[in-house]
Structures are given as structure tokens and as C-alpha cells.
Image (cartoon, rainbow, N blue to C red):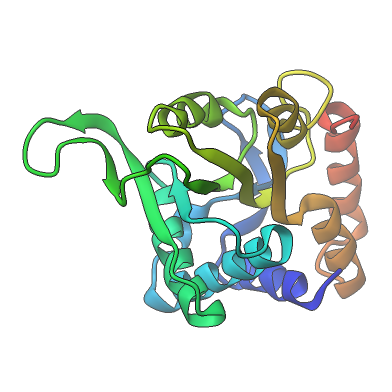
Amino acid sequence: MEAYKQEFVDFMLDSQVLRFGDFTLKSGRKSPFFMNAGLYITGTQLMKLGEFYARAIHTTYGDDFDVLFGPAYKGIPISVATTIAYSRLYGKEIRYCSNRKEAKDHGDAGILLGSPIKDGDRVVVIEDVTTSGKSMEETIPIVKAQGDVKIIGLMVSLDRCERGKGEKSALAEIKDLYGFETNAIVSMNEIIGYLVKKGVIDAELKARIDAYYEQYGARA
């Protein structure tokens, strides 16, 4: 696993964004781990988070894109932080855009905030984590409605490596459905391997994680 991924895992633990225990997910699944990007709350944390996303996007998609689109709500600060980091790290000015949950009918009117999206724009969608792919069902039509744009790919912070609506992972299902690349800064499989070696995940916790993936793990 690349050094920046190891640094990101340590960062998630230090920020208490990644936790191990007993959690009930929105899907109703009982999970031994949980990731909550809403706990990145300080300036330093958001600065570092943007840098990790920028490094992952640059490594995966390169520089040939124009807009980072972060779906409301958690995608808004992530897209802003990453846009700033991308400019500082790679000297490329990209624009950020997000959506509102309800369209605004006065002043800065419309469904979008940040930069408009126009014909010819190449867009990378950026999110915290995708479990079921439901958020993309709302996001992709909004982006596509803005004009003749091309979605280059999706970047999330964590691939949970569990089934979405079918047997494949949510990221794999999104790729199949929409035809663009889907990637994560780090996968749960990479995290588990790294933290077992560090001794953070002991035998009892590893057994619980294995049991969870036996039941919910993605088949592809």
C-alpha cells in the first residue's frame, strides 16, 4: 500500500473518523466499523483531507479535468478543501461546484452553488463514502443537466468493499451503471491488512470483521 494511503489511514484514526465497535448503518446492517467524514471539523483536518483527496485524484485521473463536484452536504466542504489543495500542490486552477438540496429562487439562484458547469467541462465527482450508490442517482442527473459535460470519474475516501444493491460493490455498480471510473483513496481491505500488521486490529476484532464480510462482502 502506498505511503500516502498509510498516512491517510492513520489520519482517519487520529481524527476519530474511522472507528471500530458496534454500529448500525443506515442500511440496517450491523457493522464492526464505521466511517463518519462529518467529524473532520478543524482547519488542519480539512486542509489535510483536501491534500489526500488531491493526491488520490492526481494519481488516478491526472490533470485533464475542470470541475470538482461535491454533492450536498458532506461533499461541499470536501470539494472546497480539495480544490484549494489541488491548486497548491499541482499549480492547476480547477473549479468547485456543489448542489443545493432545494433550488434557490433569489440572488444566487438555482440548484448549484460555486462554479457553473458548462458545455465541454470535464468533471470529477467527489464524495465521502458510497455504500448503496443512492446519492449518485441524485447527483449524476444534476451534473448531466448542466450541458454537454463529461464525468471523468468518482473519488471517495473509503471503499467499504461490501455489496451494494446486488453482489458487486457499490463502486462497481456505479461504474457499470454510468460508465465512468470509480475509485477510493483507500479500501477497507487495505485498511484491515495495514492495521492488523500494526496491531491495531486484534484477533477478536479481525474475526468480527471477517464474519461481517462473509455476510455482506462484495463478490466483485
